[in-house]
Every structure is written in C-alpha cells, then in structure tokens.
Length: 243
Image (cartoon, rainbow, N blue to C red; front, side, top):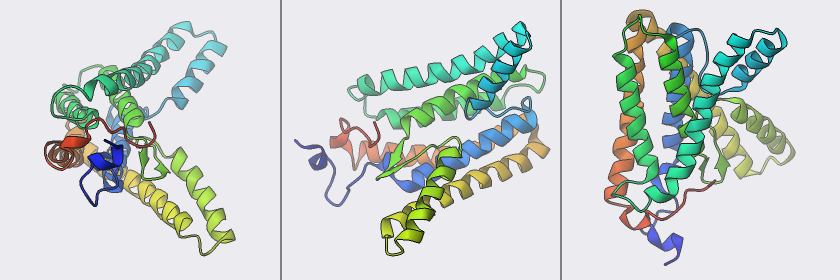
C-alpha cells in the first residue's frame, strides 16, 4: 500500500508534521533556554554552538579541566541525536505509539523529574538532561509540510525569514514565500513567548519553574497519542517529511 493511502482521506500529513505541533515545541525550546540561563548556571542548552566556542577558548587558554567539562554537554547532545536516529526505525514496529509520540512522553517525564531536584543539586544535572532531550527533539521533528524546522533554536528561522523576505519582494504574488515568511515569524514569536513565561516563573518558582513546560508538552503528547490510536493506526510505517 502506498504511503499516501495509509492516511485517512483528507489527511495529507501526519499529526507530528502539523505546524501547531512545531509551534508548541518551539515554545518549550524558548522555555528551556530561559530556564537554564535564569536558574541553572547561566547557560543555554538548546544548541551546542556556544559550548564549542567555549571549548575552543578553553583549549586556547590551556584550561584543560574546563575544556574537558564542555565535552559533557556536547556528548549528551551527540548521544541524543544518535539515540533518536537509531530508535526511530525499530520503534515503528513496536507497540501502538510512533517514535515522535514516545519522545514527547519521555520529555515530559524528564521535565517532571527535573522539577523535583533540590536547588542545591549541581546545575550540570539539569543542563545535561535538557541538552539530551533538546537534541532528540531537534532530530525528530524536522519539517512541517515543505518547511524545514528547528524546534530548539532560532538561527534557522531567522535565515529562512531573510530568504522569504527577498522572494516576497521579488515576486509579490508568491503565496508560498509569504506562507513561509509568516510561519518562521510565528515560530520566532512563540519561542520568545516561551522564554518570557519561563523568565517570569523562574523569578517565583526557581527550579520548579521547569514544570511550566508540561502544559504545551502535555497537549502535544495527548494529541499525538490520540492520532496514533485512532486516525493514524494504519500509518505507523510512514516516515515524517525531512527524514
């Protein structure tokens, strides 16, 4: 049976490819960034560029112990991408859930656990855990329809906005370019909103502020699980776009 035939009539995309799902995950990405920066060591764990720069600087200044420390979050991020890439295929043949759904559920468990850490716990626990789940999320949720996405950082969306602005200016009737421009602008907006909420909650709740990410994650998990068990039961072998 062809891939398109595995989806119910009128459904051209998997639930995990829908734009609102990516928007919710972008919101949590902004939330995580503000959380780790505000109350977990003043670092951003969504991506690894900063860590590589700091690693290089430590090497250049012969600070070997400090350089070795940066290998920890970098390795956690690498491990997350390896596991998510290796598990996605076999997982499609196991149980009622797709890998995408399982990952969001796992992310919820990690967030719950992090909220119970005492304020005296080493910051590295939260940093490495968020590095890990951000890597898996970034590697798993890659594209909505024909628009490449990054759910844990903004660089791609800023670049894509620039490309779309030029295309809209050159071809004002290009509806596709306008849609892409608005999509990336919206993703930047929800990422910022997640950071704003996180910063506010961190002022009052400190480490337990991480539980604020449970609402968007819970909504996404419930929706994806419902799709797995109902609308998309025959589409478990279909690979999301971008993979």
